Length: 299
Picture 1 (tube, one colour):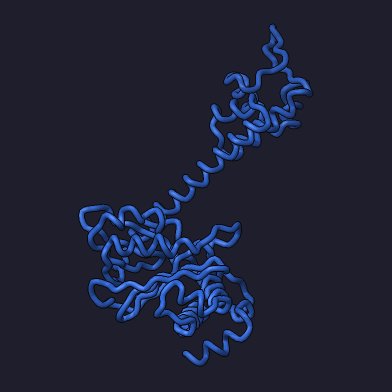
Picture 2: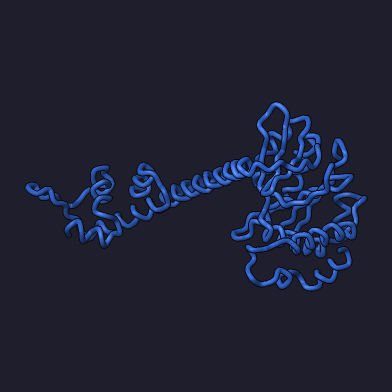
């Protein structure tokens, strides 16, 4: 079939077909020796279609060639490997963009507190064991940081487990503050945190800075308000499901009742913020039954 017809059937432009022919990925079935006009066979449509689809997911030419020439199992492995790299690159770009936006905002950070690096790193690793990754639910991979006038508390939940750790700062927190941080970014920062004698936490509009001496400062993004609201609701569900025995196995001085004032106040705080990401329906309609009444007793 002529190149124009083959282009329509494969979804590739004529210029793209010439490029892939010259690169050796999709040579024409026949080339007119006089006019140089290219012709393709119906058998080549499937290969051309897969080639187009691979390029649509930003696979480089070398990767495309490897997939096209591989068996089904190897091709699947190569695809998974490529997607993993794309996702990793996108996450790295998001982190860099957040740092750039923070700098462009030119807004001074809010100093929260200072903690011993090794202690903070150990606590982060411990609490993050209660996080989970589920499609469409990034909130389950978040870690809640709460700074009161006396302590800093880290909390995480995957709906089935609730892990918490309370730290004594090197000096009383200068501000009360709470936010739910991207757990993956915090996990990636653990090694640097652990190598730093002192880490200063500083809040900015869309994240936190972990200020460390003699090293590059670390930035972690906050979950958006809608995700933070969902995290608080799920943390409350996890507390409801926990037993006094399980809590005291973790720490003899802990009691389930101790969690509720903080959890309800966090939920109230996020509930009263603008939640444009949730939609036009009032956030209260998405909260667990009875929570609004309990929150009212603390506010």
